[in-house]
Amino acid sequence: MDLNYDDQSALEDYFKHTFQKKLLLYMPQREKEHLTPATQILEKRRELEEVEKARKAEKEEFRMKMESLAARRDEIEIRENQLKESLLKFDTFIKENDAKLTRARNKANREREAIYQKEHEIDCLLEEKQNLEWQLCKLKHHTTRYDMFHEFLRVVMAEGGGYDEPRAVMTRHKTLTSLLVQLRVKEKLRNAMLEAFRRNMAGFREEMEDVIMRQHNTISKLQKKHELANAKRLHWENEYNQAVTAASEKTMLEGKLRMAARNMYVIVRTRMKRPALSEEFREHMKHVHNYITDLKKIIAELNKEEAAKKKEEEKRNSARKSHTS
Image (tube, rainbow, N blue to C red; front, side, top):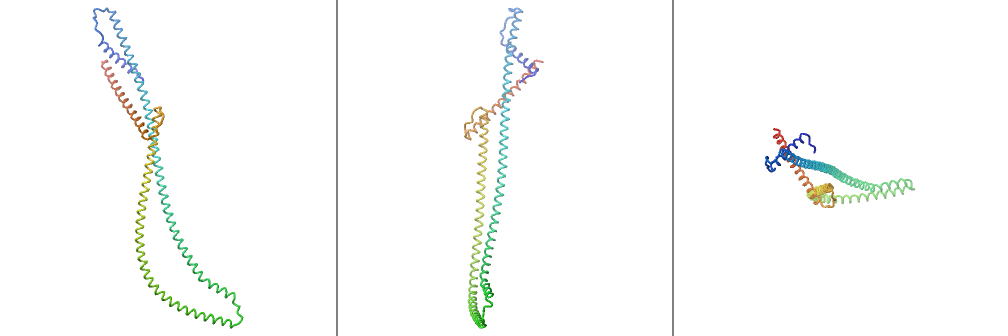
C-alpha cells in the first residue's frame, strides 16, 4: 500500500518524536560539566543516528505489514467473488430444475386428462357396438323368416306353366285348401295356446317386474357402493401419487444438494491445492463448513486490523496536531 507525502511526513514525525522520547527516557544521565562541547555534539549526533536507524527499521516493518495485509485482502476478495459466482450458479440450477418439474407436472396432468377422455370415448364406442350387434342380429332373424316366401315365389315363377291338366290344378287347389284349413285349425290351437301363454306371461311379467324392481334396487345399492369404492380408490390413488411425487421431489432435492455439496467440496479442495478424495456427503459439508469458517475468521481478523489501523491513524493525526501546536 502506497502512502502520500503528507502521510509519510506525519509518520516520520510520529516515529521521530516517539523514539526520541523513549531513547531520552532511558538515556543515562551524565554530568554536563565533565563533557566538552565537542563531545556533547558527537553524543547528540550518535543519539540522532540511533533514533533514525530505529525509525527506519520500524518504518520498513510497518511497510511490509501493510503490503502483506493488502495481498491478503486481495486474495480474500477473489475468494469471495468466486464463492458468490458458485452460489449464483447453484441458484440458477435450482430455478431451472423447478421450472422443469412444473412443466413435467403440467404435461402429466394433460396426459391424465387425455387418458380419461379416451377411456370415456372407448366406453361410448363399446356401447354403440353392442347396439349395432343387437340390430344386426334382429335383421338376420327377419331375413331368415322371409327366406321361405322368397323361395316359394321363385319356384312358382319357374313352374308357372308346368300343369298339363286342370284337374291337377284343382287337386293342387284342394290340397292347398285342406292345407289352409289345417293351418287355420292349427292357428286356432296356437292362438289358444298363445292366449294361455300370454296369461302366463302376464303373471310371469308381473313377477319379473317385481324381481326386476328388486334387482334395480339391488343394482342401485351396488352402484352406490361401487361409486363409494371408486371414490375411495381415486382418493387413495391420489394419495399414492402425491406420496410418489413428494418422494421424487425429496429425492431430486437431495441429489441436487449432494451435487452442490460435491461441487463446493471440489472448489474448496482445489483452492487448498489438495486432491478431492472423499465421496461422502458429510465429509463434503464438513470441509465446506470449515473453509467458510476459516474465511469468516480471516475477515474478522482483517476487520480488527483495519480498526487497529484506523485507531493508529487517529493517534498519529492527534500526535501530529499536538506536535504542530
